Length: 161
Image (cartoon, rainbow, N blue to C red; front, side):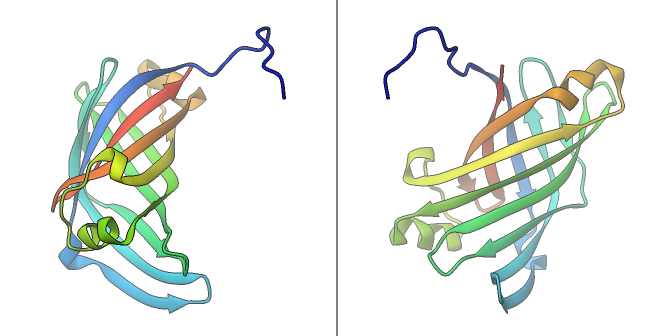
């Protein structure tokens, strides 16, 4: 297919960096199901920092993880963000992580890996009733993730403009 210069390319801008705290010790392991192995991981907090918004992740979120037979980890997360100026924003995202066996083993041991070592991509969506952040209700976003510590993942979230 030929590139048509009249068709606009996707543009993006950094939205924020999301750093999550996950309580791996309180995980609920449902086990092998017809759809894959299922585990639920409580999100106990975290932070998000970006050029247009920043704040904390409220405790009570959950990461519903499913491991497929082909080694792909499917991600399904529900969070509540509280901005520094008091707005509440519901954030959901789905996506996947996959990597070479050695990187996945480090992931299972909750060890650090770099962005490029694993394919970890999610598609965040936002909901808020706060007029100051209503623009988030109409925004599509993408993010790439990695593990930096044993506490949880870090995502770089980008707005598709």
